[in-house]
Image 1 (cartoon, rainbow, N blue to C red):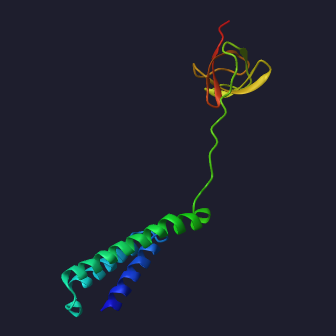
Image 2 (image 1 turned 90 degrees about the horizontal axis):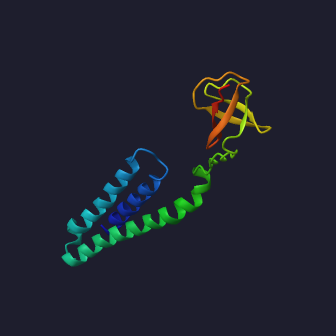
Image 3 (image 1 turned 90 degrees about the vertical axis):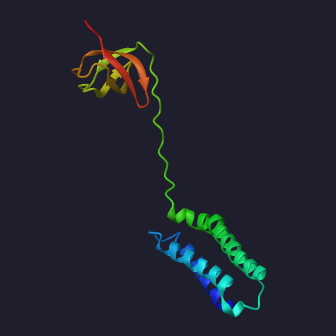
Length: 158
């Protein structure tokens, strides 16, 4: 009977470890059922009738503690450390550089601003967003604010 309990416990631990790679919770649920079956056998088996109830409960608690410790070690060190590089996306997205141009600087629209487009301000080309919407190419514009990735501009009235 102790061999059956040990096999159920180890099989349950193996299935829960397998759950780290398989989607769907099926292996994890079957592993949990297997470990709980081992605990139930430790407490209720007739072959262990010579054992006191305290020893049976100690065996059941030992099964749970052993399974929890093995799974904690698995998840903490092996699953995270060894498989992290091959199974985890580590790409990062850079934040856009905040463009700085002097507030009040003037220039002209190189493209039609609808409301985004390109403009030349103080001899440099920038991505800009027009505050008022559509502006024709060649219109004089003024910088009124900065945003991540572009400048906020408005057309100058003649």
